[in-house]
Image (tube, rainbow, N blue to C red; front, side, top):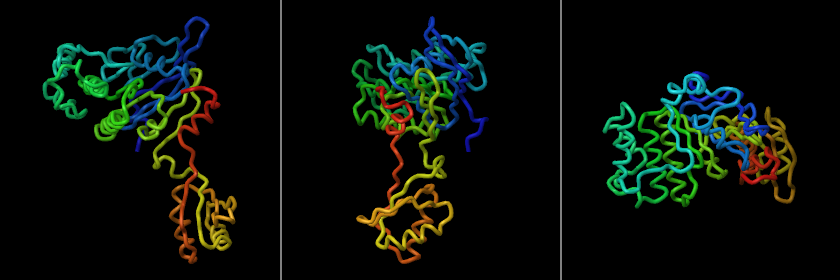
Length: 312
């Protein structure tokens, strides 16, 4: 179970102003160990500005950012010592091999061993490509090499700005699998911004929605977090009237209506009650042909939260 002790990154009332324009407005959220959090918002919402403030590329006007409890404002070196990041596209020396690029980073950073290089190369699946020149790498391979470099110093949090930009479907899937492995197996916190809502839905444990620099909504995407949230559920049965009568007897389940022509009953209940509903129907000799949860997709939810009039 995640607790406040697991918090790696915390933003508290972070604001960024340039002249009279407010790019980020009192933004607060956190990221914990072992989870992937998606930062979503329309174009111009402040996603990249927020990430640039986290990694120290630009300053904050107000508020503060903490990494492992260390202030980015007043304890910058300590704060970013356990931070790995790729902002925009990773840059490498194209005439050098993948392994030589990582060794170049090793020479600039204390404490990185050859064993650690081998370990991160294996994590991102580039063992067969390390002796090839980076100029011959595909975009997906460059992204994976960027993640390897960001992981070399064993960070507690990895921050990625649009990591799947330009990748084909296979590359996007590979990237998703690598990030899940890093988060769930290695217990690293991951913050990722992307405009691909369907991909974020598959990848993230939680998303934070911002618009015009302000916090709009936080949404858990895992079944574990949403199990007690009530949803509309459509159940196709063979005895509609008897099914309605049976469902009325089940605690915490509300009968919303029926569709006579297709023998479907609509109920409102949490996902965790679906097995109970099906069990009760079957015990009353009612055949259940289909159970459909009408939960909205992340794209539908996003358009609802942001007003649906801006492109991500």
